[in-house]
Image (cartoon, rainbow, N blue to C red; front, side, top):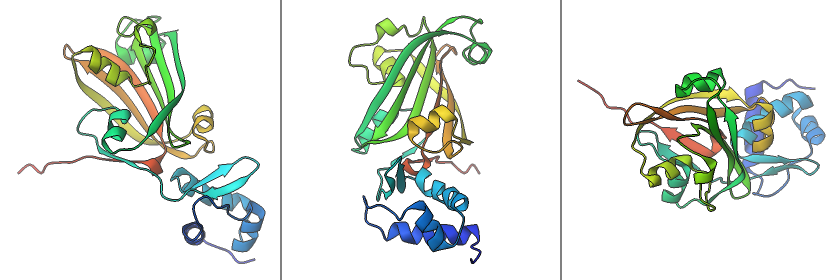
Length: 237
C-alpha cells in the first residue's frame, strides 16, 4: 500500500470533490480509504478540512455529500454591524434557530468582562444561524439584566442583540474584539454539525456605551468556509 503525504492526500480529495456534482454522494469511507491507499483515520482527518470549509457535508447514516458553491459572508471589520445586516446587504438569506433566552448569575469571567459584581443578574441570548439548511454560526450574548431584560424583547425578536439595542436607541460607541482559531467544543460541534475539535473562527467581544460601560459580552463560533472577514489598514507616513 503506497504512502501518501498528507498534502498529496488533500490534493487528491480536492480534485475528487471538485469533480463531483453538488448534492452527489462521495464513495463510502472504507472504499475511499482503499482507493487512496490511506487509513480511515488519516482520511477522516483530511476530510475534516473540506467539511469545515463547507465543501462537503457528512450525514449520519447516509454518507458524505458534496455541497458545491456555498454562500459566503464577506465583510470588513472596521464597522460594527450584525450578521443579519451583513447578510441583508449581500442578499443572502439566513435563518435563526435554537433561540434560547435565559437568566443566569455572573460568574468570575462574566463579572470581570462586564465590570459587574459577582452574582449580578444577567441575560443570556444564544442562537444558531444558518444559511439554507446549513448551520454556520453559534452565537451567545451575555448582558446585565438592567440592560436587557428578557421581557423587553418583542415577539418577533430574531436573535440580533446588537440590532435590538441600536433600534432601541442605546448610545453604543465601540466594540473590542479578539479573533482566533479554536477547536470546536463538543456542544458547539454538535450545533454546527461538525466534528469535535474541528477548527472554527472564534470572536469574543465587549460592547461599550458612550459612557464607557460594557453592556454586552459576546462570543461566537463561525465555520471558516462561510465567512471571509478582512480589515483595511492605512499606511501612515
